[in-house]
Amino acid sequence: MTEDSQRNFRSVYYEKVGFRGVEEKKSLEILLKDDRLGILPPHHESHARVMLYRKEQYSDVLHALKVIRFVSDATPQVEVYLRMCQLESGRLPRSPSFPLDPEDEVFLAIAKAMEEMVEDSVDCYWIIRCFVNQLNKYRDSLPQLPKAFEQYLNLEDSRLLSHLKTCSAVSKLPYDLWFKRCFAGCLPESSLQRQGLG
Image (cartoon, rainbow, N blue to C red; front, side, top):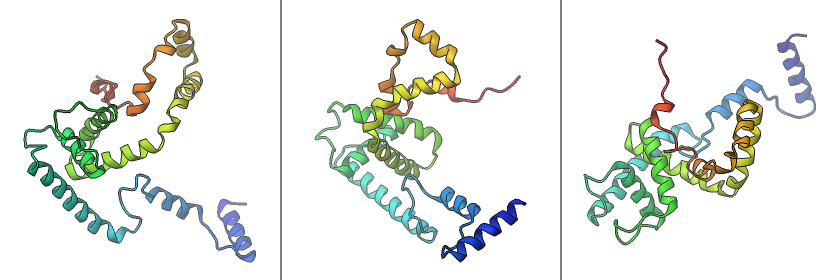
């Protein structure tokens, strides 16, 4: 039996027992269109309007930060993103000179990485904000990641894992830094660039 005839058989069977037919291709397309970060609403008709609102919100928050002299045109863009997020979440410190929290350092590292990938500052801000919010939702899982990393490394390169264990280096790896930042700011930019074959 060919794949089409099997699918048709299933469709007929599902309809007989009272289920509407579900085509795998359509289901996959829907899943692929799904916006996992929650950056855009599910209805495509409203994307333009939502983006307009987000641009206006970005401009309003940026203007507010400039009015209270928390940022200026000379402020690095990643710090502007941080201050905007802090203002919107009610965590803006009394002065820009206050030391940054560890969470803020993570935000800045992720913002620097995103800034390399996203040209538009409004889009970049929203992506950073939503990414960090998603990351914070899974903060409780971070302690489990070193063990999962070792298991994956064992599958991919067991010799490397054995060598790291022999050198007692496994326990000294900066897991906390890697996983809290999703590796942002942990690897030199040159290591992420594709090398041309000469």
